[in-house]
Image (tube, rainbow, N blue to C red; front, side):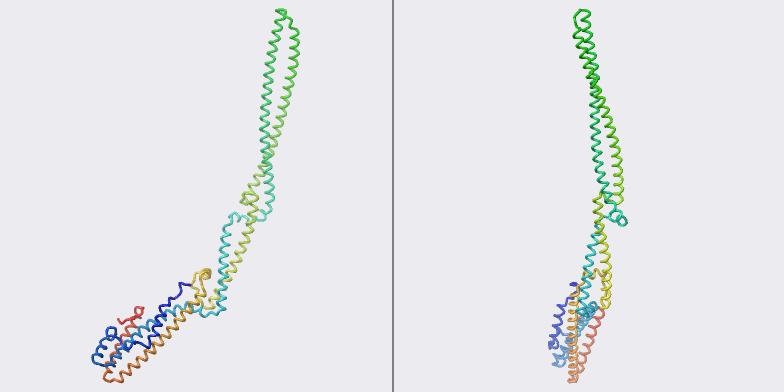
Length: 417
């Protein structure tokens, strides 16, 4: 991954600088820059070129010590980093393809497993009721549909019967009002004709007015009217009796259909509670969803088994190739690892290590040349031998302090303390 890459650009420039600089170190150091300023001043004042040359060589050798400390520390850091990715450097192209294939398959299965888990959990919790009742539910669907259709029919019939009963009730009230009217009309007619007959009789007896013909006509009219009223009254009584029978029949049918409706309603309520649905259509949909749910759970189980096998294969591959498992899970490893980056990282580190080792080799060669030159100067000029020996001894102390400082502090010492 990108965050694991080493920032090697600056250090490569530093190495290139070292490779160009050695063994072509500048021949002279100024008194201000020299680590052996006293010896340099003495050599110049006394005109001892061999001492000045020895100072310049020791300055260069001391710089080499500082540079070697930097390179050795860097080499140690590179070695530590290479330990983490060394296994990737040993992998063949076939190994890389195999690992990529395993990780891609595992990552794809992990994503599919996550999607399936989301879909499974998004199903209605009521589907769990079908774990043991699926066969019963399938058999109950046609029965529930029949009960629902009968319930609807009886509900309509009950509505019609309720309406008919209300109509019969209104009809009964009208018939009763008619009978009351006929009864009152009959009484009023009797009273009216009784008064009329009395007046006619009074006129005939008292005033000897001939009222027999009107009286006879009135009697005939009374007889006809009485017959009509009697017929009307009997008709109303018959209609009342018929209305009463219709009402009784309607009540009987209403009670029967209400009882049957209540039976179907209770049955449906029981089935709805049992399967946690609201109607037969919902039960059918839930059965269909449960089929998908079972298919997904079977697929999820099979996928988990394959993932476990793939995990074992990846674990075996990693152990076989010596790749450390410094990650939380295979899933996280498969989702985040980039094999190409790891191999590129290893190649970059290997290139840097090669450069560092080459630079150290050239520094060692140059240091050996400097030491041989110092010994040659000391041997060639006996009068300066003691001075050159002091310079070499001072160089040894300064170089020792640089090494000791780096060891104690854990940082690279570039300058003389």
